[in-house]
Length: 82
Image (cartoon, rainbow, N blue to C red; front, side, top):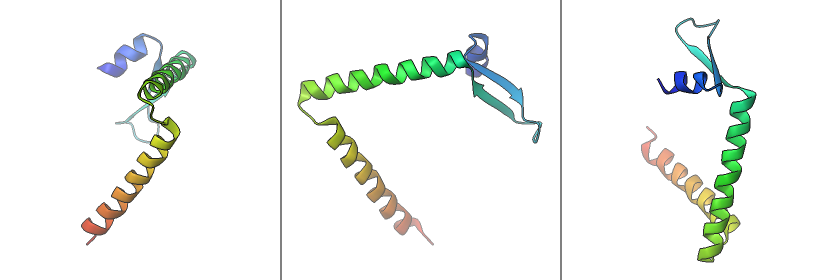
């Protein structure tokens, strides 16, 4: 349902997958891509402001978060590997 709303607003196109008729292919339109880019930039600005106000270095925080995620993935894969 959400996709049909986005399609009606001209943000995505929905077509039947020619290789698998029961699946649809959803693609961003130019307008959808532009809106996505604008939203991404806006969120980046908000994050920058928030981290500036708290005194936390966003780049270091991102680096640490990625390192933590990678470590958690390593632990999870070794723990649940059979």
